[in-house]
Amino acid sequence: MKVKELVEKFEKFAPQSIAMDGDPIGLQIGSLNSDFHKVLTTLDVRPEVVDEAIKTGADFIFAHHPVMFHPAKNLDLSVPQNEMYANIIRHGITVYAAHTNLDFADNGMNDWLAQSLKLKDISGLVPGYKEPVFRLTVQVPNVYAAAVRMSLVDAGAQVDRREFTGYTYQIDGTVYFIPQPGADPTIGQAGEPNEVEDARLEFEVPQRNMEQVLSTLQDVHPLNKPLYNVIKLEDKFHQFTMGRIGSLENSMTLKEFGELCKKAFNVKGLRIVSHNLNQKVQKVAILGGDGGKFFPLAKKLGADVYVTGDVYYHTGHDMLAAGLPVVDPGHNIEKICIPKLAEMFTNWSQDNNWGIEVIQSQINTDPFTFI
Ligand SMILES: [Zn+2]
Image (cartoon, rainbow, N blue to C red; front, side):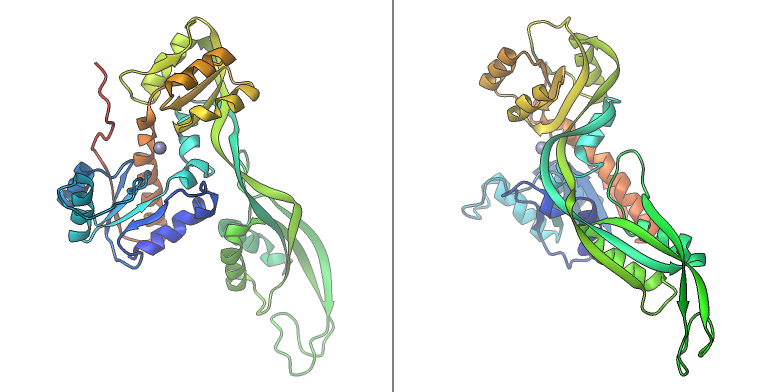
């Protein structure tokens, strides 16, 4: 299978357009036209991970963090980072990274993290890309309506909703027509007046799914030339967000919440920005990675506590002054993407008979050790 087939499917879920400007996402090393048979999911691409890929025969590395955060100024192979690039190329491995597009995706990185804490009533924290939404209206003989509706919803004719899916609207009506002599109608006889019980289906389709939805419509609609129209909705868009905010089932002390985070994220230690570990918390904002600068937003949205990584000393002072306790379990909690991406690719492979192998990196890429 070609790398680009998996990438195209992935980018329906986490399009490049929703990433932060300047984030070096996408193909990192190799070619999208390469064939692969075994993909390795990882948080980081480090020399140990590349060795792991070589040892396990993985020819595609799918990572969260981009590989070249600092551009290479030469290819001097005594530099470990450069030797790693060379090793990747020598072994014909393709490397792809989904970074802030995975952070912003619906049911992506930040939902995985929020689910680890069993948060309820989850909504978005940092607004990002507003994706245009279209209304698709399709006319179809009534007996085919259910089949067409299900196929189009499967193809992406729905705006992602957290609590329900498959939202469509149907109006039943009657179509009157007379096929002219020489016509070859799917329904009725040439020259005879006909009445067909008909349905008009309405869908909301996010821009990224439009092409797939219209090609599916051509495939599943019983008429050669399906009747449909598409209208861009000026007052509606799909808002992608990074970070999540939600509530714990029960309130607990900050200390208890810290313990919960250690367990949920499988970390040996974490830092808490607060001098009062006995204060109660219930509403939790969380943003994987380096999210210190977004703390005012968490505060504004009423979070009792904010969970994010890489909190800087002086930002910690600002958080303390603002009265928002912060739990910093480190950047490495994003390792949750390793099993989650693997699970997603495995499901896609089964559903589409890709026949690929999916493996999860076992390497600990956290540079820090707690003592
Ligand atoms: Zn990160």
